[in-house]
Amino acid sequence: MPTPTRRRETSQLDSGAVERSHGGMAGSGPSELAVEGRWCRRMLARGPPCGTISGVPTLRIAQDPAADELLGRDPLALLIGMLLDQQFPMERAFGSPRLLADRLGVQPRSAADLAGMDADALVRVFQGPPALHRYPGSMAGRTQELCRLLVERYDGGAENMWADVPDGLTLLERLGELPGFGAQKSKIFLALLGKQYGVTPPGWREASGDYGLEGSRRSVADITGPESLAEVRAFKQDQKQAAKAAKA
Image (cartoon, rainbow, N blue to C red; front, side):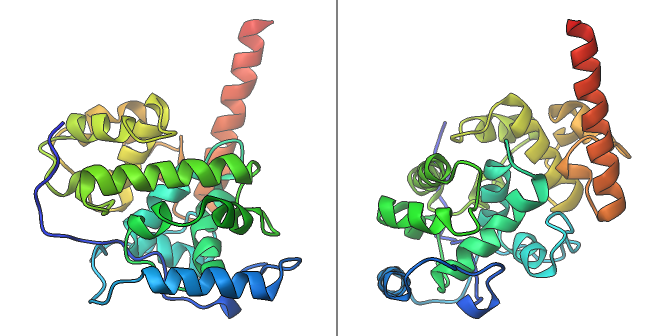
């Protein structure tokens, strides 16, 4: 797949400080956090923030205003939230990018910052408490893998994946090449981009399958508040029960 040849556009992960942290870093040494924060600050490049999406409706996936605000303006945060959405409550997975940013206490401007971070230091950040995932060690590593791929293929910008995409099927193929993104997750994220993020290349609904259907309540792509979250959960429970019944 050809690498997009575009000017550098970088995704910011946060402008928040540690004092806004949801749950904080209780149990972690302040000196350790200070060292990691200073390391990240040295990684920052100066310049105006880029990679944000304008005119996107306010997201209500994490059911937390600060977390949802970050998801709405930062494609990298949204992509990481989708990565973490497995074997972990959905709203907590999409709230984790906010926690990650708050714990670092800095404003990384591209996936390169996370890709280049010391692996053990990132694992400690993922461990919390509270943990950013049920499996913080493995998901910290997978997050770095994802960010490295973004650096190698998309100039460090998550939004570059779809900035020049000709159609929905091509974007689906690109998503499927990301670490941790299987066929189903790729279709769900494509539907999320189309339904809520203003990314609507030709044929995106068809490429995302049933997840792209108007009015569906199947996945995170359909969550716009507490009511739709409950409907999506009910749908998933029905699917699990049907699967169990089929095996019986």
